[in-house]
Amino acid sequence: MADEPLLNLNTLIDRQTIDIDGTRFELFSADELSVLASHRFSVWGRRVEALAASQDEEAGAEYQELVDRIALNALVDMPAAIFETLSGAHKLAIVDVFTGLLLRNRLKAAGAMARAMGVPPTGATSFPGSSDITAERPGGGWLKRLLRWCGLI
Image 1 (cartoon, rainbow, N blue to C red):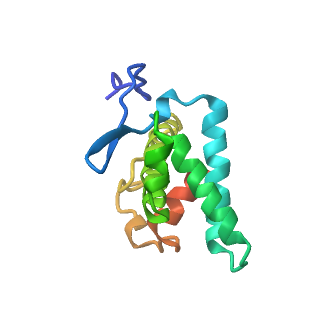
Image 2 (image 1 turned 135 degrees about the horizontal axis):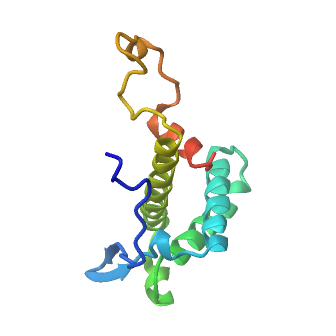
């Protein structure tokens, strides 16, 4: 177990793809984003969450504009003519998938930090006979906790 690295980094870029009307398009990989671009996506993601929870009528226009911006920036070389044919639901689906890819990378880093600090893996008890399993779980669901852990809420 000591030979296993805390963090395994790969400089080879592996882009995930989506199909739009039978044509394949690539999504940027989280590994190829600059620090500034990664931060920008985080800021945009927090703003999308805030706007989605808002009851303000004017928030709808900003929400749609922000979803469009994130979706367009997540795609590699997306022709404007094709992007304009996408509905709001299509663009939101692209944002959701891309956000999931970003979160996956952040979770890897969080897991490496936890191992470095000696935090026991999920499901492990702190000591024999521990009643950790019967402890009350935090509320809000797994997605909310995941977003909170990654600093998105």
